[in-house]
Length: 352
Image (cartoon, rainbow, N blue to C red; front, side):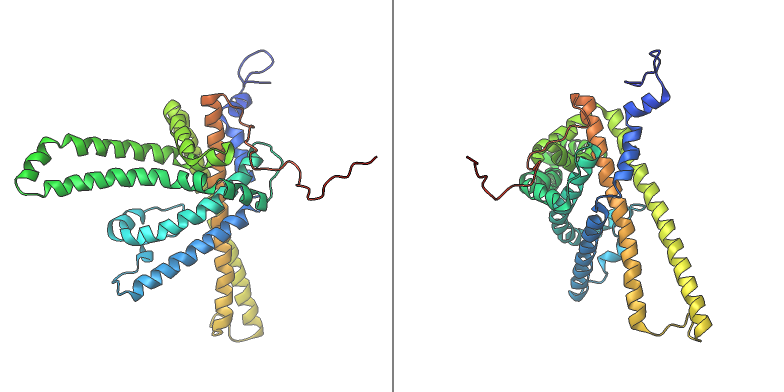
């Protein structure tokens, strides 16, 4: 059975599901939990949380009336209501928070994407150190540019619109010129709106282009945008499929972690009640602190798994769109920067 057809040439449900990528997404969901990528993502999330905590403490020491992190549900895939207050009320805090995280996740995210790309394309599994080596090789011109280029373009256009608003603030002249040439900021606003829609649907395809094809960041962004514009329906469908993977995994793991925590703490309280009178009235702050550290680690591990599901869904979306638009086999992967065999540091000796 090939190309979605059975022996008599009629399409089959299984073949259709294979052609549209249903099985690829299921395989991507499975690959997201193996190869050490969850631990790598968890480490990245912990470093990000430490940076958020440090920046928030600096903000509170500086005399700020509110702590910006109170608005955040950090790395919570189920809710994004903190984005608007962060931009509107604490934009400078957001800039200071995001710039180091872009550098961090260009490295960690790039390594995870490379490992997941190897798994999805049935390439021999690459180790974490080899993936980091590949990421460092493509870091500055690849992953970092793929992250920064869309934001830089949006920032530049936004600054132009802001400057036009400053021009309109000039008495008399500003009012006249601002009204007469209002089509200029209006065109820029349309460009921003179009770019926001494209990035919303295809922004998760930028970095996978570097991980799969080994191209520079500008080419990765261009290719991803061309995929979205050439196959918008498929791009939206793959984006929705990735979102479904994220939210279903997030809710499933949240329920699992809460259930495990409730069972553990309930049994511990029961055991303490049997052997002592302390029970729930725990006063040992050191013990409570260490227990909270372990519980926090479990929560970060679950969030790391959700992050890997998102990255794995992005990789398979890129591979399916590339196959549809360019006709490139979804199993084809760039091997530039990868060794097929470990390098030898011993010169071969010719036998007589």
